Image (cartoon, rainbow, N blue to C red; front, top):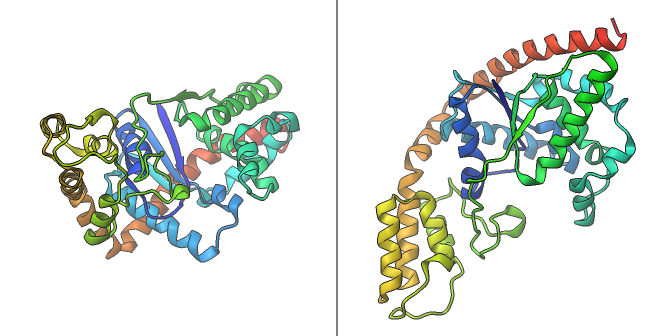
Length: 320
């Protein structure tokens, strides 16, 4: 079973990234042959500064390795190091109808939010399909916002196979129902666009200050509190042991336990949880040659698989 995931380089990760995407992706290393790529081609749809894109790409590689990615178990690479994927995108463009892309919710949502409606943004689902199909992926973990794009991938694979013969594996989506929706400091879903994140790898003082600004209700120190409706508890349970969580919940219900106490406990459990990853990250930042070597090795392996698929595709469509 081949599992494929892709992640756009969007800056320093926060705990919402980790529990919502990074940790589930890393757990899939144990379940099959894992391919994980840094989606720098996809990142171009928003026209980032070139220097920022380069920096964020390496930062993301460092962060994944620090958080537990095993390059012996996961083929880890930059999307742009496999140029065959853009060739396949062009070929798939010729069996993709405009109407299919016009129905993509993600494109309409981004345009509504003010993104420039460029062709890269419009045809994003075709590049995503190429990413998946070129490696003959069996399983693709997706969030609910990407489910429609996977359906487009499946549609294009079926359409191509019906026209040219059975070339592509039809991928199955995998939505992890148990993946937590991590609340931000304001109670909304944690997101850089909402400016409500808690970074994983910031300085101790900065993380403590951010946690102390988590929004709570106005109940006083003496008042009993509802742990099930509190953002602090929702964040705490992601990293606490079951015993620690039950102890905090009991203190909430008993009263004489303020939100300041809870936030201090949240800071301590977060700081301890990510301590090994911070240590590993510092080691990697001091050895970027290793990081680049991992990406080169992964790209070579990915190109091998891409070449196999593209030889079949070229012959099928008459280019050989």
